[in-house]
Length: 576
Image (cartoon, rainbow, N blue to C red):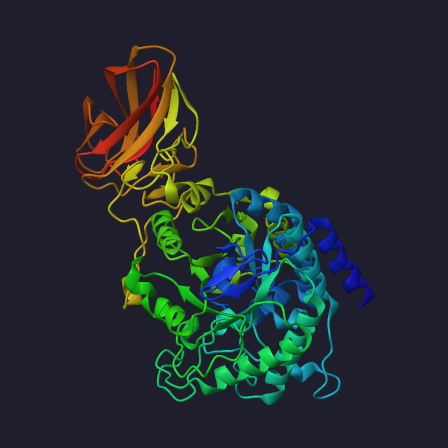
């Protein structure tokens, strides 16, 4: 207890006046009464893994199954060693410093209860709670890094004892054991955990609040297994009310975030509001970015005169991100994007690189065959843990640009500094909104009402998160990627710098299964050249064609490659 008091005193002394958040009507404000729009990120995959983040979704979705697969290869001790390194590298002070510099002002921490307390079936004394230091230490450290950057930390119980729904991956739900809703001991443990957390952090001004239960998805009385048609939700509201009561016994200051059923969005049967410092959280994925998709949340805000917060969103294109944030800014709604790190990630701000050795483990787990040796498997897994260090990830500047600059700035920026004479790879087109830096016909993922209609905005799933389709390239000269799946009317823009007014030769490296045509234009639409691209005999049979006497001006030139008809793949063009 003494340690906690000293820690809280340190935070207060470090920043002087507290910036503690609270609600004021339909707004979240600080203690000066200033409106605070939470611009956040959720470090999904750190305390709780989902299979798709580690590429194990086909055979191990929930975390407990992932752990079983790892233990099968390197034993229980080896698995524990892997997780120790994984947690250590997954989120560090360097990560939080980076997020603050990027422009984020909050973190939504997805917590797994089993880092803080034992499962009920492992408790030495039935009905008693054993507290584990691991989770609290991880949270203490994260809070300290957040405070140092003036970033709010919102605690989110992502995996509640027993699991809070039928979507087993998001809460590590083992269906062979009683769920949160089926077992009173799990509910009591959930309440006790929140009281323990609230008591520990009650004096911390950089705790943004408590998100009680992530994405409940359960059919209490309805037909839909994930609770989307539930009308009363009585057990859900009762439990969240009981958690709030326990929290308020020790902490009367911090915001309570509540979530509805059906992955956070079903607020049917809501009982009278039980706290005067509470926020509705909703989640938004794979639908349009217009007022209609926010109507239910805006109606909640108006009806109850309470703030709303988009507690989780993401997994879409840069176009979708920019449009969504513009919509949220219009309505003064805060948000938390998801996730921060995952393997082979284009739709997040960092990408964790896979390795050939790890891919071999995935192949074995999925299809069987010769079992990798324990030493081989452990080395492969420990390398993946090492790759989770921020310094070893690939920072996705295109995503960051879309989330921040492009929201208010319609201009384009060079993806790289292209000095000519020189070689420019096709994948290095400018940063900017669609219609300004590029034009592509598939640029967003909208499930709408039918998940089977999911579309890939970048069909190659490589390098960048715009609508441009990028694929792995094996040409003799390459930056590893080429632009493919080109369609009539699409175009790409490149900002290049010339030392003088001069005519240049463009040598275009392309591949095409049939004859194609492109135009080279300025951003203002002035035609510089028309180029015929004869069939090269295959979509990855690379060929070079040159066109002479293309005039460029001294200084900056914005050049567009315009596809008159589709089918040509571009690797690079050389200007000399």
